[in-house]
Image 1 (cartoon, rainbow, N blue to C red):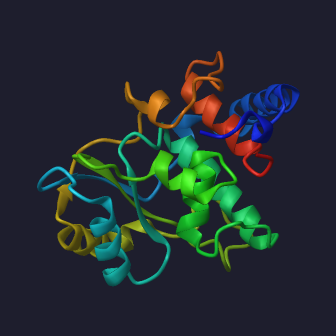
Image 2 (cartoon, one colour):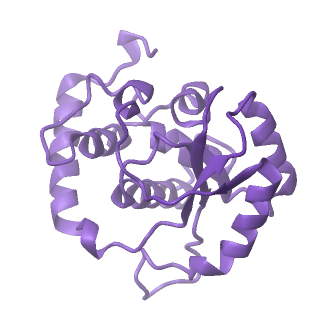
Length: 213
């Protein structure tokens, strides 16, 4: 858990929450968003050691735009796209904390400055039965196009299925949605908002102040 001395100030949280809610209403209507390139997966057996899954992925992926996160982590398409846009800003502004794209994305998903805490919150856990295989879209050389349609992610489906085989998983139906355990596992007790999707607002609020803790 983050110490109280490292927690963002309450006024920062409230201001970030207001900005996040306004931004959601103005820019990212859920119905108008394309699916983020994420495949829900179910493992052949409950995960015995998440480090083994990570090692298999690292050994067989083509680049650091592929990652696996916990089933509880993404709560909506907007949550994933907003985090991707935040990642883009950090990379282009040379302000990323992690040395890798996947690490920085997980850090921002978790809403923390601390990498160890980020993987604890958002990663697979011992006993996990499901998760998400994610491909971070490219954003280079797409000036003048819709920033949320940077590439046709369907071209990565073959790679996704191959990686599923390597990590011992199959495709599972479903898209990002809050789970009963999401709030607890992502440590959101102090962040929940009052919108129609309070977990989404809480995560976007924490995303907005993730570089302050």
